[in-house]
Image (cartoon, rainbow, N blue to C red; front, side):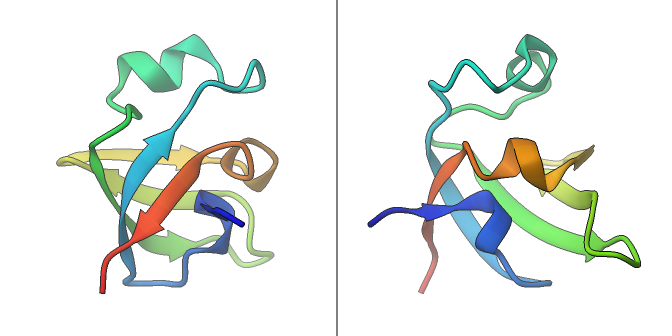
Length: 76
């Protein structure tokens, strides 16, 4: 089973593997949420949603309902 972006813990880094779901807004792709890019979970909001991410130097906030559709491979 593949890991998803929603499973990252604060400070963890991963490589984005797949963003082909229809549930991912085009705007996220335009802002760098693409396969091969490095993503780091910077912070979670008080109720764990949304997630504040650093994707190749771009800071984004996305909801967990979107993050579960983004497949990742965690860095060791």
